[in-house]
Image (tube, rainbow, N blue to C red; front, top):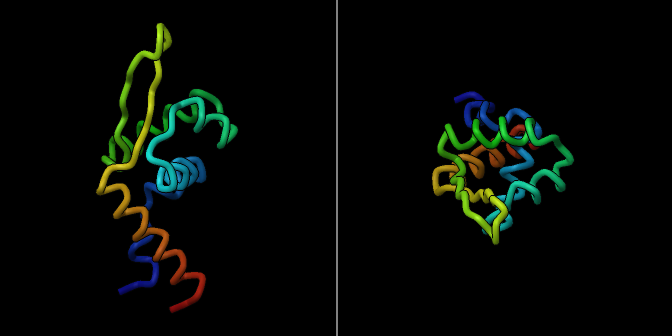
Length: 97
């Protein structure tokens, strides 16, 4: 099997990698938190969260806090599994194991 077999194309983009990294160490993050931490535009963040949601790697919850809409994201079990596999593959590639 190739050393790059478990590298996941979904995580190729730095914004998606950043979203997953944040969600792996937090129970959830809302849209504004991700936007501030990643320093991206609304449109960029929206398109990358949609890609992760389509892959079923993150779960999206929409709610209202007071009168303001709030969108919050968390990883799915599949997303956690695939991201860990991706990171392991990158580490093996770096260490050439």
